[in-house]
Length: 93
Image 1 (cartoon, helix red, strand yellow):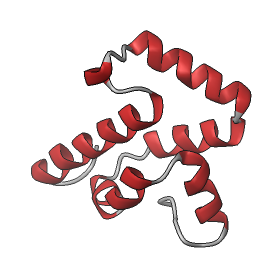
Image 2 (cartoon, rainbow, N blue to C red):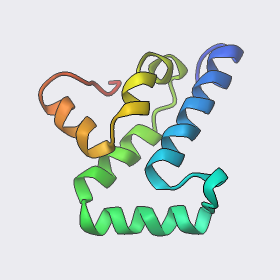
Image 3 (cartoon, rainbow, N blue to C red):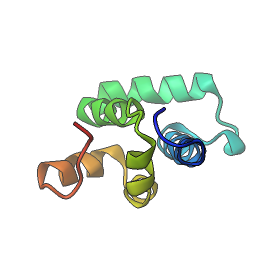
Image 4 (cartoon, rainbow, N blue to C red):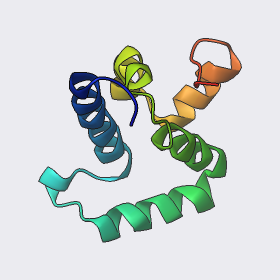
């Protein structure tokens, strides 16, 4: 991930929380197997949401994660996809 050491650490925490919120939280018993299954289910039932989730998870700019932390904490990939279409949320270029 790109950014200062402090930005990267903070961004990784935000990214992990988004991952947990979307696919299953480790502290609630989620495992990598459960996350993989949940992602597979999302791809099957909501492919555009799954695509948005994967696009978000591929972002390696710490500043972007920090600037968008409130969106990532409060909205699902499906909602973020709709917000992006309306120009209310943007992915890095």
